[in-house]
Image (cartoon, rainbow, N blue to C red; front, side, top):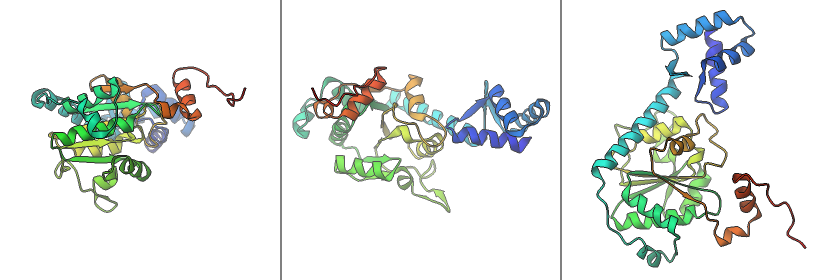
Length: 289
């Protein structure tokens, strides 16, 4: 029964679940093992007692997912505490950035830039065509004004390449940023943290809880972090919907971009995506009269 319970939790993790509630786990294990309920409940109780499984309230975790979730949460809370005591309100004319970058930011984009100046950790979210990339460029310009060394990262090679092309700066995959190799794991960690003053991470909806925990371990408490992503995109392949959980925690400042910019309004895909997100049926006409 023990190996069957572990297998069941791994199967649920493959479906994106970091944990299972007891009755959900018992039901799934019964279907998998085709065994009686009593020995499954007994095996589960023994595994909890021996700490082969971790329990938090109603949630039952495999230990790696439990420690990843706790580790990520604690690191974010540390950054928030550093925000409260350390962050000097930087005076900067963010509107002057428009002249420097040649981009006219709307009010919400300016709020995002101001939040990045003011906060140790923040989230920038919005659907396709809402100006996340443009806003990120403004944030980079503002942080450069402050003399900060900026790191850029994304979960996949394609996303890192797009980020590099959009910003004119090197962006690395998270694995490369953390100097991962299969033999030794992540060289960048809490004992050998990242070197820099600010980190901007794009496409955060694709980051699972294990990778996020490894990233957070490597972020020193002196570093600012900006998470960028669209929570309405498909979640990560691995377990955990981390970006959505961070936003829904309401502990971390979130700027939501909702205005679709003119160049995106000509895209049927963009407009259909926004219609679906708002609970409307997309326009399926071909635009011909």
